[in-house]
Length: 152
Image (cartoon, rainbow, N blue to C red):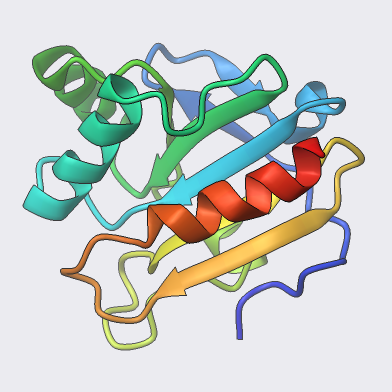
């Protein structure tokens, strides 16, 4: 079972595509959308990350979006540059952070589920969505609705 809504989000630090440390607790006071995806360079992951970058679906002064996968920082960097992805991509190569949110893929344990967790301004898990069919795109409307409730 993925992390429960209403619980405090585990704090973590991961490296971005630029080898900079990114720490969840540094973003308190903002709604943070954590977008887990299985792998860089895969079709659905590319579609989703490009959509987030090219359409204003999560834009807002109080919102931060990051992608998380097991890929390396150099893979993230190359993919981000090649595809014009604008948000940070975080490397979780050993799936330690993924495991702390209970989002390791049960059928393919060397990748994460395609999942979304929204951490609210106070550091609480406000929303959690796991896409059961990994090849399918996540439901962005559910994420937008959850985000709208936090902004109200």
